[in-house]
Amino acid sequence: MAEIVRIYNENPNPREITKVVKTLRSGGLVIYPTDTVYGLGCDITNNSALEKIAQIKGVKLEKANFSFICHDLSNLSDYVKQIDTSTFKILKRCLPGPYTFILPGNNNLPTVFKKKKTVGIRVPDNNICRAIVKELGNPIVSTSIRDEDEVIEYTTDPELIQEKWDNLVDIVIDGGYGDNTPSTVIDLTTDQPEVIREGKGSLVIM
Image (cartoon, rainbow, N blue to C red; front, top):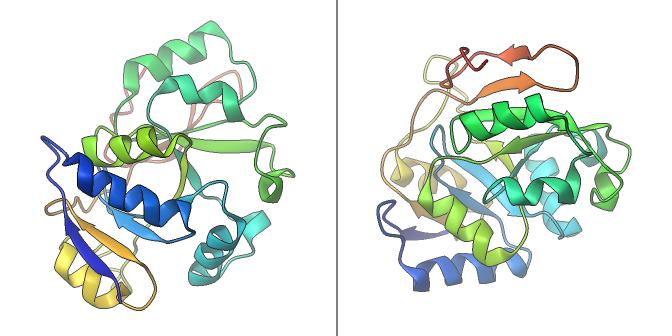
């Protein structure tokens, strides 16, 4: 059964953050708030947890388009090839914020993602998930919590999320109501930024 843990975005309780991090380190799955929709995540270094998320989403792990939640841009060089100044300026201007940026992956990607040429990077403007990643010491792999009802699209109430995901995850963080609009996805691997999905983030990024 999933434990519901209340954490406040304005001032995340360090003890609760540590509890979540311990769960992630032991291969647990966590649902947490971002600056957009609620996300399902696990420790990027834990292969069995990654497999569990892929199974839940009904995709093959090596083909899954999960994004990496980072604490800040200092994590970038761990998984991303060297980027040019103009690309870095866009990232610096937009992050933390409601964006997923597609960037060229490097050779340090976790084994299961070695064949992927690109990686989606997120630095949400949300203190809870960034505090978790900071204490964990590496990114968490993330995917959005979608609703079966295409009209609703995303569940925003943590208690309803806990009811639905009770037997699939270990912790549901109640960080208040979530958003119903996902992040804006922008591909920065070519000469010109290309919008893959229009979401909460403004398209005026240049």
